[in-house]
Image (tube, rainbow, N blue to C red; front, side, top):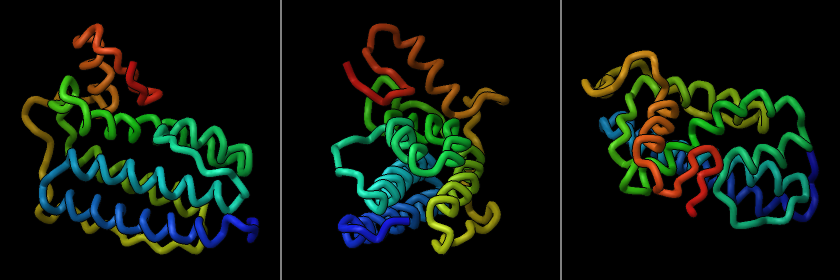
Length: 177
């Protein structure tokens, strides 16, 4: 890992990433799966930017986890194994921010599963990073009745996008037309 000029700035990004991680877990405990998904996306975005900054990347305004992962995997190829996670969690950002998709029903099980995988992802980028382990389902919301069993939240998001038609929203790239 580089200790070049981007390191102090990267440390600041990691502090904010930790704060968003705690917000994600707190939102999950407060039975707000949508907010938990949003803060998980925010946390991973900042961890990826911190990782890239430690590798002398020039900071850019970008929110797409898969695009950040493209850059990060050039520095550490095994990060690529978390592409599916990055694509799913990018969908949470869109679902929380844009009305046609805000009705996406994220379950606490979806978020807990993604938090667990995200912890492994962060540990791969920052082996010394200590992230709290979310305690089992105490006070956490289970899936809403309208959820379709067997579909991940990201798949439900993509399905809603197709039903919404010409909204101009692309889930995978989290871009608006």
